[in-house]
Amino acid sequence: MGFFNKKKSNQNKNSGKVLAFLNQKGGVGKTTMAFNTAHALASSGKRVLCLDMDPQSNLSLLCGVDTDESDKPTIHQLLINSIKELKPLHAGALLHDVIEKGEYVDILPAGQELSGFELSVAGISMPRQLILKKFLEESALLERYDYVIIDGPPTLGLLVVNIMCAAHGLLVPFRPDEFSRKGLGHFYEVLSNIEDMGVGATPQVVAHIPNLVDLRRKIESEDLSRIQAELEEEFGGGCVTEPFFNRAPLVRSQAERKSVYEFQAKEFLALQGQFDSIAQKINNWNHSESLS
Image (cartoon, rainbow, N blue to C red):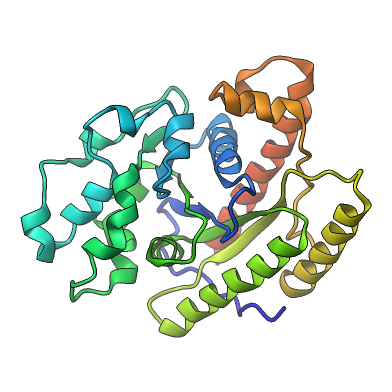
């Protein structure tokens, strides 16, 4: 597939890491994967902040924050406030007022106004692709949290470019079909373009996550094998996690806005184990990054 050459992050080894769940294609379960992975990391003793960068704000809803039902500021206002050139648009939104504290993970929520982000910053002179990165650095969030987990929108626009430039690692949920295969190619073209910009270290791919899989369908099984072989040829063995099947417990947990860790029933144990494995993969990757 010829995606891109991976680079090492040059972040201070004592700082937290930004991990983004991204895929150009919608309907692949990015939000569910991000939400449960955040809880898996929290259950392993890590301090975790969820950062919703999708105007649909589904991650915010899963974390118990409905921005459509309140006038509270969101990540959009914090980003606008961080740009000096946009002072006329600044509002009295402070970081500690926007972060919602949770029992297990905290959340910086999004709202529908984030869909106007690209238009809001169209005329500024600073590099527009680095707005989120600079906000995270200047807010000292990476000193307060071990991991910032970002849920991105199903697009390849400026929001996603900002996420890619701010992230240290990427996790890529995908459906095992031909549409996802093409979408992955487009996704990595954008990532390669960001590398060519030379604006910083390119984020590393931590894992690809096959999701909503139904291996009873022969074509789906064949597509999964084909995509996995192509990804492993590019990124090496182990870059694709065990598939998540389209089963009732994951649907139930999402419907009740709970992580799989909040259920004691036996049918949730396998899911908890899968997310534990992703958390372990992330922690191992972080450890190897810190040693490099």
